[in-house]
Image 1 (cartoon, one colour):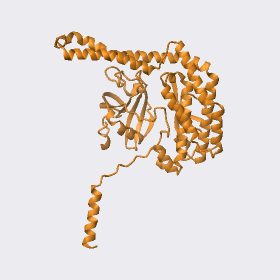
Image 2: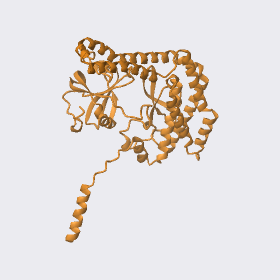
Image 3: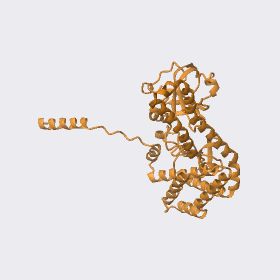
Amino acid sequence: MSDTEIEESNKQEDLKKRQPRRKQVKKTQGQMIQESLGLNPVDIQEIEKKLFIVRFLDFFSEDTLEFIFKERIMGQNIERLTTYLSALQVEREEEKLLKQSFDSKNIIGIIETVKNKAETFSVDKGIKNNVNKRLRKLTLYITIPIFVLLTVFTIFPFFSSLYFVFFPILCVVCLLPQLIRGKVVKKWFQFKEQNKNEIYTENRNDIMVLKSFAGELLNNIRSRLLELEVPLQLIKFTLFSRDYENLKLESQKSIRGFMQYFFTFEYPPGMDPTPIPEKLQQYHQPIATTRKGEKPEKNFIILSEMRGSNGIIDHFVPTLKDAQAEKINEFLNECEFVKAPNDFKTIIPNYGDSLAIYCVCGEIAEIDNVQICNWKNQFKFYLFETKECKCEESVYALSLMDDSIDVPEQFKDIF
């Protein structure tokens, strides 16, 4: 190699070093499944879209009152539903039959009819708007006086000298939004709980039509997955009822008075499960999950300064790690999960006012589920899942199982 070629080569190397490195794009689980099984991306997209339609129809059927007076949200869901169905590959006979069923059963018309009847029912009971709008108005009415008080204390010296007199009043006023919000939300959930059976009874025939179409969609998805030789155990999803065939119940939990069921598809009788490729062994979560699955969890708490041994926790300091939510989500996606053999009260025997996990609103969280997470057979820890609080938030807490455990270097900033 000549001096000129060497010089040119060095210039190229320097240029490469100066160029910014492109951030590696992380593949979604759907992309990993598609690539590992050699599937057409359109096939995976269709499965995701059909599962969205099933979850929407099931949720609407089971909790119709949740959708009243929500024109924008309902409009978005209906638009997605019709768009997804119109985009199906009509060259397949199964898709043609699905579209014909959708049209002949007048699914959109039934949804609108049931929603309108539920709204009329609610108006007769004194509910004339959706709960979120009522909360926003109440918050505004309370925030304005607080702002006025703070302005008075800041501008007028005379009032600032009486701060010690007004301070208790100010504290009470500041707490009012949270207290009122809790009361309104509790009243709304009570209203739904007391009237959901009547709503269902009055609209039973229409709701049965919606569920029958959801069942057709589920059978269509199952048949297509079998045709594509996709391991059915990879496709997990949540529904609010058990009124469908060919599903395997994995687990269940109660959310705001409603049972939420976690399903996979069942294989036909006599058929052996399709093996899961090694690349996909780590994936225990669905292509499409719950209605909240579009965004990752963010309310992570670490039980720092943990003291305990043999899986029993004696002391901790709860520390919110919302800034590291993305890293924690990625970390958890690399773990395998098993239900803890001991119940929550055994694991944290002194749980209470002085030793508790708190929701983001400040309430003591009620633990609903405890999992043991296993990261690549190198590191095990607890994951505590709380019940949904009255502020409609859930919290996830991570903790060591023993204070003598060595935390891997890359996760020391978390724990």
